Image 1 (cartoon, rainbow, N blue to C red):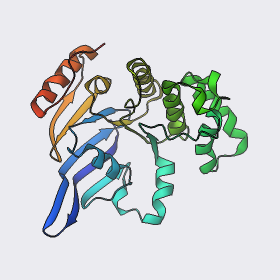
Image 2: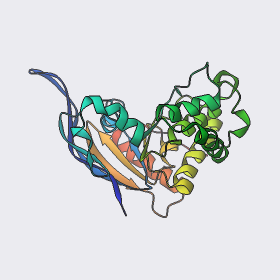
Image 3: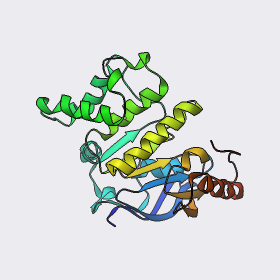
Image 4: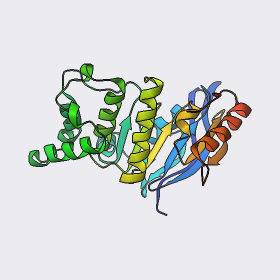
Length: 255
């Protein structure tokens, strides 16, 4: 397998001398190309901070992050925006769509920023919309579609530039249970059929059960790793609950 992401002894501190908070203490792991990795942990465990460091939204205090051989921690600030555009896709809990643009225009915006030739924009949008089952809402505005459709639009926008890594931060947090299940099936299909490498942060066991591997964080450190392997999703869900019981929190059923 090809290692696409590698973290070496990542640490993140906040504050100054005499009042230092260690959000991430010493985390190392790798992600293989095409892998669907979940990161779980209670509030304050460091999972969002870790995602922010990987996405270059935040800087690390110590350690190195490599994305396909590039040391992300060494990229100069003025080059970070371009690096994100060319390498990363983002799916946020609150969608981050522009209500004044149609679904199609929201997706096209990512291509426009990357200076994609105009003749290539529409064919790529139509192809991605078909894959994510949103072809029939391309002319609508975000306020005219459901939460699940908005999130699939956000996924299309995140994937349209073929990012090396798709980062999802609590992607089902703003959705009802039905929409959540539909979105997670879509994300799983993106991983399995399109070969996308996905790193998803979640506190929810049901959401995490769609991943192939999970890292559990506690107090800024990796508490445990869990792999799905040949387990059914229900069996994997039960194992996730068992770990969450040890570190606190969790659900009681899966549908």
